[in-house]
Amino acid sequence: MPSTTVAVGSAVGLHARPATIIAEAVGDAGSTVTLALEGGEPVDAGSALMIMTLGAEKGTTVVVTAEDQATLDAIATLVAKDLDAE
Image (cartoon, rainbow, N blue to C red; front, side):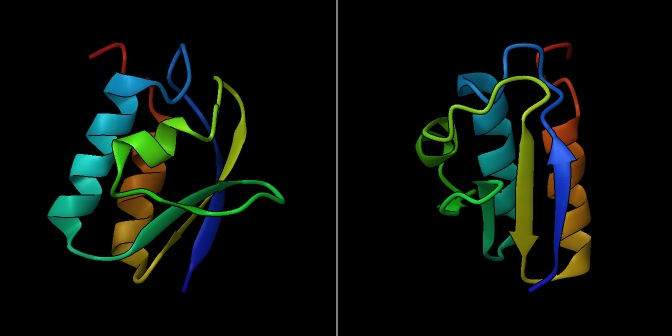
């Protein structure tokens, strides 16, 4: 599965709102996506609760892995975006 590394863009990290937006996008994509801190265990990006367990703050590097490149690009873009500013 393809993967990429991105820095968390949300001002307060991957807390409830950004995690929910990302999890919903994963659900809409209908494919398996994981997020992990570098060197850490991957979590299911389709679950907002699991995303929040990462404790990723703004600027934290996160590895995004997905079944296909289009989904990977879409989720990586969301992780890197400040989802609190919308």
